Amino acid sequence: MRNFFSRFFQGRYGSYGTDKLTRFLLILAVINLLVSICTPFGFLYYIAVALMVYNCYRLLSHNISARYRENERFERVFKKITGLFKRTRSELYTRKKYHIYTCPNCNQKIRIPRGKGQIIIRCPKCLTEFQKKS
Image 1 (tube, helix red, strand yellow):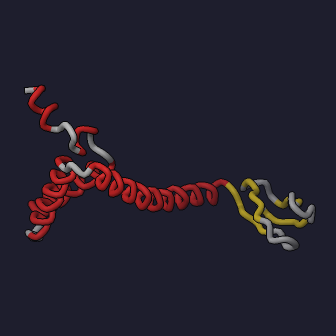
Image 2 (image 1 turned 180 degrees about the horizontal axis):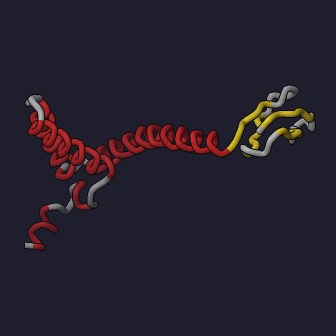
Image 3 (image 1 turned 45 degrees about the vertical axis):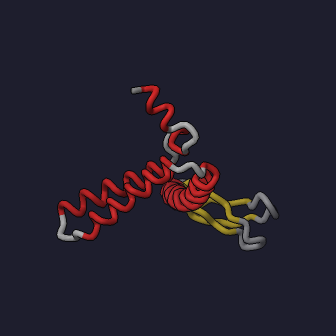
């Protein structure tokens, strides 16, 4: 049986294992199936089936370069979206721990820890000093 599958997948995209796009589509299909069962939105079932059919098509495809390009495009878009969320999370953490002030002279952003009282801030770029509350 093992030889059968290894010969069957030889020269197909699925022989290299699953990629991020395949896993994402599979997870999306399962979520659509669960939502279609729990809610009256029956059309989600058909979307889930279409996603699974497309997944099988990708895994059994002989056009490896086209499937690879699809995955590369997906990863670029996915990276942009996740980068946006990571940046937002980082900014929220930074605002919780630090005050961000702008130098009145050169508009350089300066990060100061919170809870230090009235302090004199020296801009590292233009060496202008100004007083702020942290």
